[in-house]
Image (spheres, rainbow over the protein chains, first blue to last red):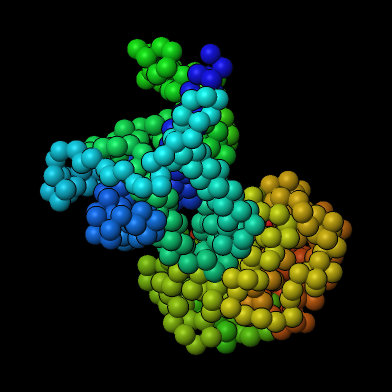
Length: 289
Length: 233
């Protein structure tokens, strides 16, 4: 029983860390730009597909693919922000949602055109596919690696935002973009930079998912973005701390749900979100409106 | 002449706020925009800073046409702005609020954190305090200090004396004099005529979005009719 619980916990943690990787970019973009980017899941999907293709081109060098794939997606993110999203900032929120949702559909179809509508089996990678025994049962090494990556990203983002002048400028602009501009921050360029960084985080999540999920499908962005949204809402929209904690909770909850009450797996996640919204509408770490 | 504003017209949506407003500021001067609440003083400062760009007219800063430039571009040219509600970054500490401005500024000069803290010793004790947790008076000092940290050539102050106790206003007179000694030009909007009389050279009286009267502060102070008509509530 104990081994089983430990393994379910570990599986939950690795699921949670994937959701965190996607939710972190989503949360950063919402916190700074005030845009709820539905297309963020598409960046995750594109990250996965780009990495997969680069992997094929470069002879199974996963790390090089992981470096270059998300950078390609950043170019896509740049185009989305600079030439489309920028023009809807002054409009009401529904317009922003519609535009980013349009990109979801667009990117899904684009992936179908380029890579085909069916699923692609991702390659098993030498060195990453092994498992090690934990309490007498084997656990995948790669999942342990993901469990390590998540907190590293969290610490990196915390350090960036709290300890560097870039981070202080980002925080200043996110709380008051007009005043930030008045002291010399080129706010539109800063927004583009933050959007690209958020895109990179989502695409990294996708790239890291390649050896993990087994199958790449054109709809893979949607399932993760729903989880990421739930996490962001539970944690408090715009709060990175909240998103991290929310991702841990949702990861563990769905892992335990799948193991012990499989029929209620999804139900558990949403009932938790509903409960949090009723009890603390601003989320665990959100600021009250 | 450091600033020349010529017949600007500024709107909020469809409401026509500033109507053909013209005025000028000479280098080294301290100039006041006077008038009651809601007559357009803040909008005038926001127009100059580029925060609410006018739809027509001309704004020349250091002999350059700057109308339509973004606020950050105005800041790079040497303009700083202290809004009436101060807009201290709530999430940054007192120290960070000051330093961020110096880092973003493209000008160097007399003012640095040590000198701002010497001007407002209270800020020294609040260095690690978040902007959110400062008192109203501390925010005012920080707002003014933050504008100074940019070492601008022209500083726009919106209601510097508002909400301050009479004793503090008196020390603010000394502060403005000290800023002025460092060869900074000041354009302020304020309702406190006594205060303006002490620190300003000239004044423009704004009423319903237009400039109705101008003169030296001494002349305005002596003109009871003008004071009664446009300034006293």
